[in-house]
Image 1: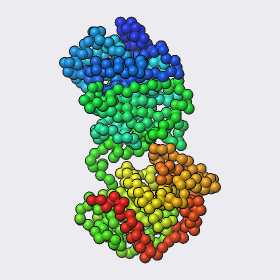
Image 2 (image 1 turned 90 degrees about the vertical axis):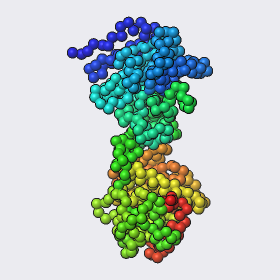
Image 3 (image 1 turned 90 degrees about the horizontal axis):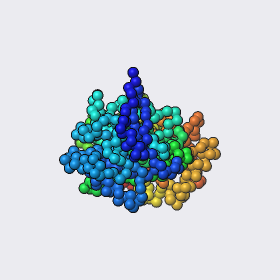
Length: 612
């Protein structure tokens, strides 16, 4: 038997007087009653003026005095949305609420609040269903969605994520979220205008600016999943006592999906907090359904990747999802004990966080640190042991011989310039210039998109160090990767004298030569992560210029293995066309020893791996 509609009974005249209309939804065979405001003065194209507020905690008079001040200066707002704890637990808060409940005081604006986020405030809500608590103050309900006649659509979830079933009155369960998603998502669903939750979404800071909260314990993964599915244009939360406006993030995968609107996450502080953190947020919003599609999907310059997808879901180290101390330990690595004497023939590794227990290990043999090939062409080793090493952590290991895994006997270790925790720097064999270098992961990874977060972070540190190194020499650097016919990631970093060409000329050189070979290099938008464009296993060519501009080509069938070198060696850039093929630039072992020693010494002031 289907349960009857939740009755609004004598509440209807009050709702009608407040210009509220009632809407009924059927969620998982349970009928729920939700309320939606009716704003007569706005047309479809006119924005709705909204205020959002963090935890009120019973300080209603302070809140509404502030709202009155804002409205005197900026004009009337249409509604106030409150997230977090609305009611307080002190006797003073209870006495203040009684004034509004009895009508002695009145909220100056239609105010919509979420339910209890703690057991102590549950008693302030007479029902789990939405209802009017006082004039102009409406409790939305446990969870649901409502749409005003303006078309503005707001989804909401009250309380915190439950750790048990059945969920306590101040918590929500997975069933609540599933029911909410089921009412909204369809083939034509594009997102909601506003999402209200008390808890933060876990990992929302991924790819964005860092909040001033303890990210190890902050947020709910269920709320993150909800936000990912509902694609709100604005998402408000509280409970952390912090003000945080995350950079806007996109809801589509660049170059793979049609453009969609961006989302903004905003956390607001507690009303009247002593630190004077922001607790009120004002904004105008034209309902999604009324917007021109081309306007809706415009991307701001500071847009980032979606924090809830791709690496953010699988990367336990960065998001903290179900992460234990054991899981935070990276996966395996060999470190070489390097002589404290500077300028020796051997390479140097990290000079910090080391103990002094060393094991024996292989020196380099015939292998190749080449630019273009991931295989055997070229010798790049010696039969000697260049230094002792120890096994400190385990990195991903290859299934067969690899010329670039640092622990491999095939690696020509005399070309190594610096060793970090997760990556190492090496002079390129047969380099375009004497300062042409490679950044390589110590463990076995095929491409950038396969890297774990800690490896990516250290790779970025090496890129920044090289950029500073080259700038000091009057050069700009070009970084490129070819994930095609190679088994171990080699990030090529090539310096170009500032006097040779501008960054725009470099970009044009790549574009023109790609067109000549019937390839279309695509520019990747700023703040876009390569992992969002090229799933693991995708063959691609990738270029990053010193300006931060990034070019990408998805390799379809055949691809010229020396393309990156050919562009940089061309007349338009370095004008050394005879050095386009690394095999034509090989040196003797003695020459390599001398060149790597000079490069090692020159790079030393920029080598963060030598810091104590």
